[in-house]
Image: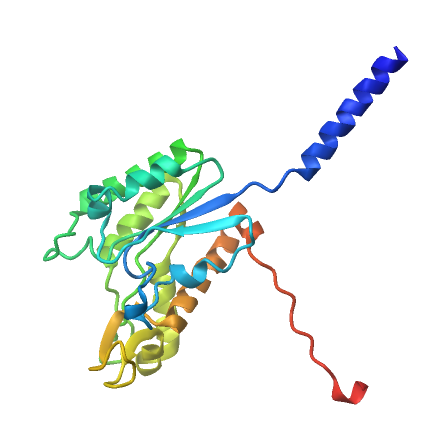
Amino acid sequence: MRNYLLKTVAGLSLLWLTAFSLPPSKITVYLVGDSTLSIKETKNYPETGWGMPFAYFFDETVTVDNRAQNGRSTKTFVAENRWQPVASALKEGDYVFIQFGHNDEVPTKRSYTPEADYKNYLVRFITETRAKKATPVLLTPVARRKFDAAGKIEETHAVYAEIVRATAREQQVALIDLDRESQALLQQFGPENSRLLFNQLAPGEHPNYPDGKEDNTHFNELGARKMAQIVLADIRALKLELANHIVQRAAAKTVDPQAR
């Protein structure tokens, strides 16, 4: 009996030690969307998608897999077989951040997606993500830089952003209202200073754009970081489990020269 008890205790102790020695489970955060968050080629710099700085916010247990592509809509993302590999790779505990709309809403583009279809694609992404016990997060399309004569930011995604909001409510999905929040940020900067957030360059200012660039949709490095910080703040505000994996950096210590 004594030997049996000793073996049982030893076995339980081994299980306890094994449980605490296992490496932390890995989380993959998939980003699906368009050029406003995609990874840019060097030839396009300083154009920067907000998904690029976003990848550096997390500890070593998190991998950000940015599948966003320039010019894509919900329709073309599916048609080009870009969504299915994500759905197939998903595992329990992963996340899918879904931000489309810029290309879906333009009737003259090949990527145009009628309103009802746009919603159906969003629901498909949600349903297939949940089927793998992963977490979908919907984002309204990030704002374009457009001000009226009085210097007030104008809404450029009204219809398609509202479809995202309504879908999030109906499907009970976490929502990051990047449209409204980025509008607020642009309004804070104002009509002139908001240029500092976008890929806007004078002729000869950058070798990638010898003739200059006037872009009110795509961000530079500063703008991408500002948008990524909005997303990060909302991850915390929504109390997603992912927030527990945000890197916590210690504040820099100041040295008092008089203390030497």
